[in-house]
Length: 102
Image 1 (cartoon, rainbow, N blue to C red):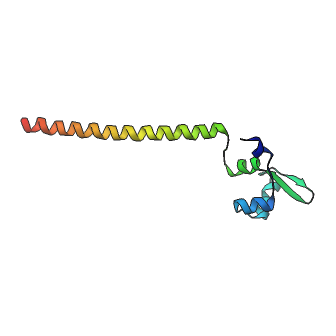
Image 2: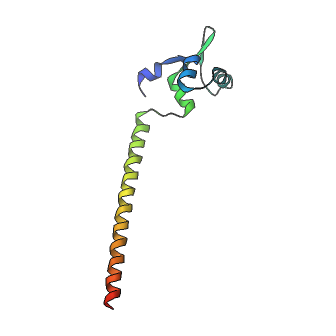
Image 3: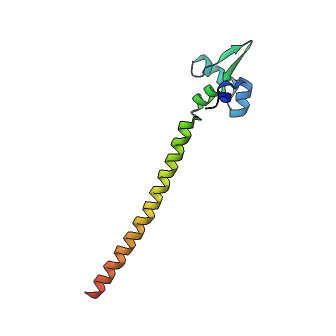
């Protein structure tokens, strides 16, 4: 997570517009302790980090590396599935050849 993201502070109205969450819902989440916020004058402000935590958005380099690793593994699995299908086809063809010769 970047230092800029950690320090980015948004008002509830900005959060509401950006993430399509009603302001009264955000206020309720803050009062319930589900969303960390600080009162600045008459309104609450929330860091971008806290919003992402609440929404389940991971933006750390570790999570991005994990996603990349998962994509690599999915690609390898797909390649192995293709290879297995090819082997099955070869075995089936050889079985047919052997059966025809008998």
